Length: 228
Image (cartoon, rainbow, N blue to C red; front, side, top):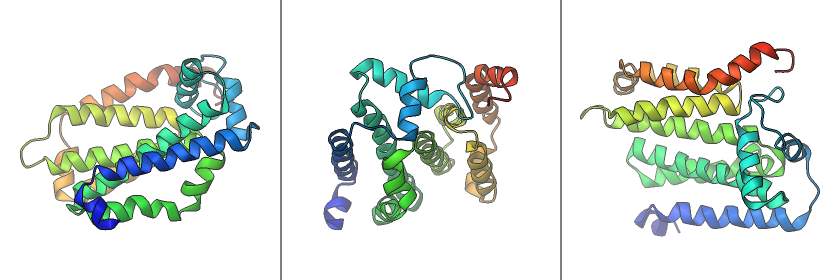
């Protein structure tokens, strides 16, 4: 199996897609009863607001869009969640593969998450914003890795755009994503190649994009601080 995956790295996303489609089907047919996070999303997504409660609103917005696209059902809840989990596994694989140049290490990093109960079990059982934050974290790591990898030939501006977008969606998925950004920033500036990529004047572009994305919700927070 390892040789088969290493022979063509694009096989892993397909294999993982089959696995997570199975999760969607199992969740859909096992029970129509909603758990806590699921019932919260089923209720809150009926309304479009700049904020709802102590969690940022982006996941609820996306859940609303999913409901309106394929209908209000358990499959809509399971599908959105499993897309985020699938993307997390794929991005972790790609980030480590690109950072190390070794497909095997990418496989270990990605499939190793199956051994973390909070990821392999709890994410499927009843998590929403945390699942989306995991996706944003993996996308941020992938973005920084690709920026550092291209620093010798000049980092393309599109990576700074993606960086700002990723931090923006992460902040709108979960407030404590700020800790992730801080941790990755500290780690990046401690390594020369990553420091050169991150500490560029175009980082101001990234910051501007993030601010534009989160500003409407920040305004809502100032007006509803107790609720937030």
